[in-house]
Length: 108
Length: 108
DNA sequence: GCGAGATATCGATGGTTGTCGATGGTTGTC
DNA sequence: GACAACCATCGACAACCATCGATATCTCGC
Image (cartoon, rainbow over the protein chains, first blue to last red):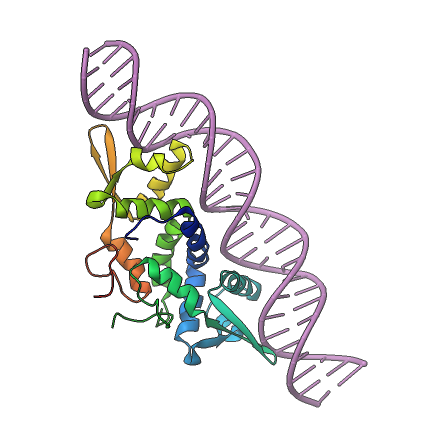
């Protein structure tokens, strides 16, 4: 945010922000990030909301397609984990914190 | 993003991200932030896009109502400048960079 | 007061989004 | 093979959004 974004840069980052710009998806991201092992089962996530299962599945898909969440299936269960790179790209906008390897970290 | 967001926190931050989740508004923010004196005249911003003047005005209004831009009128011209607090609230999500006094700064 | 320039507002329109119920595919168990 | 559990997809609907042209509002200089 210190130098003007090119049209391309803006059009690259906007979809990430758009994916995050929903209270449900924001909480989904934080739930996954804060979960032990940095990954969470869909069944756990479903229970954290008053929304229907298809709706949660839809939001997870949006986050996945934006590149913010990675999907891995183990048996019957599906686990999602935060994609560090995508989060870093967004964090980079706001000063570069989290741009190294972690999804979210403090300065120093 | 290291601890689960409360529903309230998520619903407070989501509108900020929603306001930013548009290529035009992202570029508007960066143009204002990068402008000399950290504020920019609407007339300058209009010229930076291929969009109509009402459309730019609309986007500026969205950013203003989200608390991301502050408005000040000087004579015929209207100047916008980045609101440090709102940007810090978003930056806080991604590691706390920019949460002190600047709208966007590096770590240290 | 009047015309000109800079912004904001209004109304319309086409596209996108959040949510749901119903359904389908996959995996594990009996 | 039959059944149950988990998750994704589909179709539908209401709400929202980005954009535009037209118009209103404000300020300046004459």
